[in-house]
Image (cartoon, rainbow, N blue to C red; front, side, top):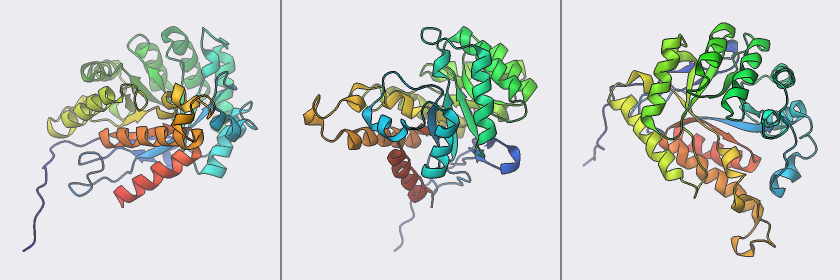
Length: 314
C-alpha cells in the first residue's frame, strides 16, 4: 500500500526578481513552497551563489584566502574575472571596503569608477555592498547608481537612515536595492513598506535580514528568516514576499576560527578545511531558512554549496 506524504498548501508566493542585465534572464525568487521544498510546490529559480571581491587588498585576511587571491586582489577587475573564469561564479559581489570612513575613506567618485570598471568587465550580475556607514553609503551608492545607469546593479546595504536617497537613485537609474535590517521581521517589513511608499517597486527590492557566521548567533538569523518565509507563504504578507540575500563570506572569514593557523589552534585541525566547512555550513543553514542568494568567498565552499543546491532542486 502506497503511503501518501502530507503536503502543505501555500497561499503565497515569492516574487521573481530580475538580477543584472534583463536580457540575460537571470531571476531569483519565484518560490511557491518553503525553501527547497520542491516536493510541495514549484521552485522555478534555484538559489544563486555570488562570489566576493574586495575593492582593495584586505588588511586582515585568512591565509586560506590570501593564497588564492593575492595575485589579483590589488585589481578588483582581475579578481572578479578570476572568480568567473576559474571558479564559475554566477554573480559577483563587490565590497567597497575602501570607502569606510574609519579606514581609507575613499571618495564616492573613486568608488563609483571602480564599480563601473568591474561592471563593464563581467557578464554576470553585479552586487555592490557599501560599509554600512549610513551617511557614507548614501553618498557612495547614489553616485554608483548614477554612473552605472541601466546596468541593474543590486546595491546595499540600504537602511532606514538612507533609504530615501539611495532608493530615489535606484528608481531614477534602474537598479535593485538591498534592504538591510538588524535581524528583526518587523523592521524588515517596515523598511520594505518605506521603500514602497518612496516608489521603489517590489521587483527592485531584495531583503538582507543580516546574518552571523556559524556559532555567532546564526540561530537568530535563521529564526527571523524562517518567520519571514512563513509570513510570505502562508499569511499572504506581500511586503515580505521578496527574495532574500545573505552576505555569508564577509561574516565567516572575519571570525577567529576561520583565520587561526595550525600553530595557533592545533586542536581545530586543517585551517583550509575548517574555513571552507564554516562557510559552507553557514550557507547551507541560510538556504534552508530561505536565502535566494548567498555570497561566498572560497571556491571550495562554492563547489560544496552548489552541489547541495543541485541535489536538492533536481
